[in-house]
Image 1 (cartoon, helix red, strand yellow):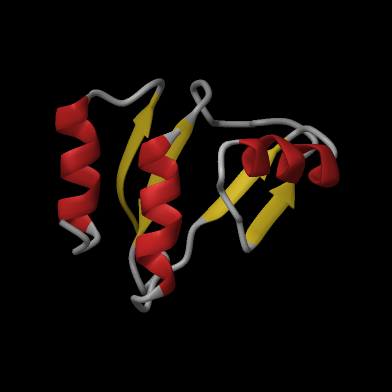
Image 2: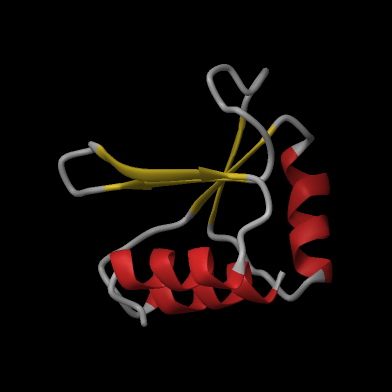
Length: 90
């Protein structure tokens, strides 16, 4: 989970936000993230992942709330670099 830790840490100093979505209890999910050193400021609970192809999924949304890019499944190192480049953290 080092990528997600870096993503959350990097967005705190930029005009960006990371929101984690879960079907689990929010408290349980925050504990799960905390076990990996991730202090997620934004967590939302969903009844189901409608329209999301799998987990984990990452959706990058611009300031106009348009989807810029989405990726499903475990990211490769190259995909992680792409995400960081897209949001200006690389």
